[in-house]
Every structure is written in C-alpha cells, then in structure tokens.
Image (cartoon, rainbow, N blue to C red; front, top):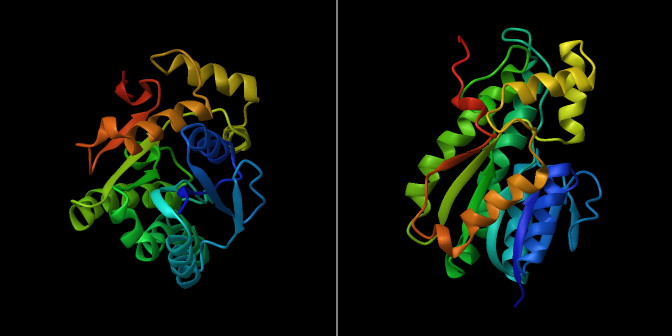
Length: 240
C-alpha cells in the first residue's frame, strides 16, 4: 500500500505548506478540510466537529494506506472574552481544535503503530502566553498540549506524539487577526518583528520543516514534546 500522511486544515496557509513538504519527502498527502485543499494529493471535505464521522474516516484511511503520520493543523479561533464566549463557540472550538485529533487517532492507531508512525499537532504560542479576546482558542491550545503529553504515554512505544507551537506566521489567518488590534497590517507586522528575536515573521514552510523533523527518523527518541516555532518570541519577558 501507499505510504501516506493525513493533514487536517489542509486548505490554509500552514496546511498547504505541510502538504507540499510531506509530498517532497515522498508521502502521499491526504488533506482534510471544510474547503477544497488543492495542495493535497487526496482531498476530503469534512466537518471536524463531527467526531464520529472523523473516527470513521480515520478507519477508512487506515484501510487504504500505510499511515506514517497524522498532522492535526485545523483550528477555529472565535473572538470572545472570558464570560462572553457562547457555549456553541466553546464546543465548536474544542471539537475542532482538540477532540478531532483524538477521533482521528481512534481510527488510525493500528496503521500508525504498524508503520512506526507519529501524531503531530499544531498548537500555538497562545497555549502558554496569550492576549485578551481569544479565550476559547487559547484554552483549546493549552488543552491540546496536555493531550500531547498524555497521548505520548498512552500510544507509546508504537506511536510517537509531539507538537509544534507556532508564533506569528505570515498567513491569511494572521492578517485577518490584525483587525482586532485596530492597526494596519504593516504596523502590526512591524511590532511583531520587533518582538521576535530573529527579527521577522515566520513562513508556513518554517512550521512544515519542524513537523517534518518530528515525523522523521532524526526525532526517533522524541515524544511528548511541543517545539516552539516562534523565532524566539516567547523567550522575551513581556514585562521588560
């Protein structure tokens, strides 16, 4: 059977870069998204809030391919502060950002174990230090990193589980988020560059490279880890 990697959120900027990198590394890419994901070899349009269907799809993919990795990149980021985020926003965010990867693992676990496979989640710097107004998103990413640690114990030794935590990555989603700051894109980018040790905003390919490392043999003794991909932004003490 064909060796494959499953990428959720494949239609976005980071998702497309993940698909392209996995293809260049020799894997067939199965992209899962609500939207069409042209960068994937195989497109599956699926609502990740439907956990039962997600698990079913995982089982179908495990039957069709030798799965090397599940990369969970899909995420919702509703705007809303603590106490003013609606229950539906909370549930949708948790289902997509967190529960979907567990559902995928339910369907793909045996195939991943048979192929020295990995699960890699795309978390966020907001899991550890965040800003106001995105309570559900920040909470879901913190929970996702907790899932990485727990799943690494549950799924080892056959499956390694890790994550990456991107900072500011130059995608459409980042640019859309500038609106809540009341500043122009260029003004906000200048602030982000100033606060990042490497003096630039990340590219989707930076995230894809880190994920490729975690999937590959060079990371064969790495599990339960979340690697920051933020240009050193979280190294800065915010009060100074």
